[in-house]
Length: 70
Image (tube, rainbow, N blue to C red; front, side, top):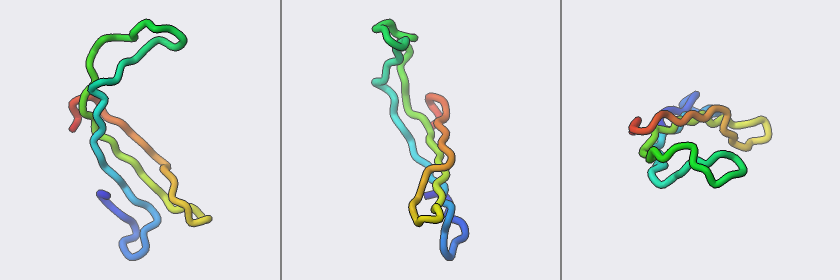
């Protein structure tokens, strides 16, 4: 958790993490042909999560940065 607003009773929380796509491969849809053979790697992930009226928490924004960003 990188931030929580408002601090006394958060309704919005920002999360930061690092994902690893090192072993992921991309294929053209419906085929076994690779899109490319470039390796993945570590990627920064940032998400905004908001508490909804029913009390559930839901991701409202999600961003994955480029390979090598973490």
